[in-house]
Image (cartoon, rainbow, N blue to C red; front, side):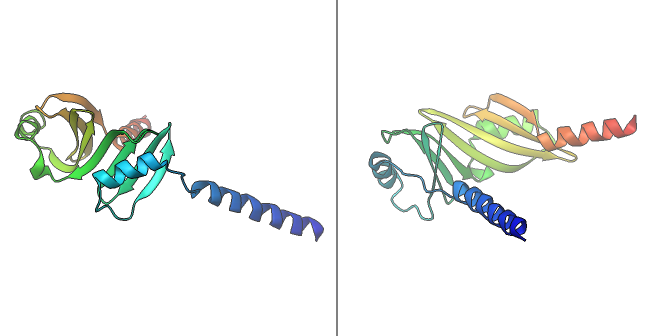
Length: 157
């Protein structure tokens, strides 16, 4: 009986520790908070995370990263495919005929703007990153599709 009680206490302790570490509040520096409030005064439901010495604020359809001095390092926002630059739309039509646009994220780092576009054409999905002038920067087959193709290949042997 003593062992059972001990095991229950240990189990509860580990469970509590795991939950606490996942939801531990981030101590956001005043400079970061001030910059964020100036740049996004109407933001609601903001969740902060700290990773690699950058403070990430997640809210609405945005993610923004700040350094400890409050300088905006980069940002990502969900945009509608209708809001893509004409050059990117044209590149999709010419280089990815038959694919449909599923999701678009606009990434800004300094003065560089890129668009990560999720393209679908059954049975595959691609994640393609374009420069604002429509040049392909990165073209990746979705990881899930790679695994599915490998599983089918392994099953055929």
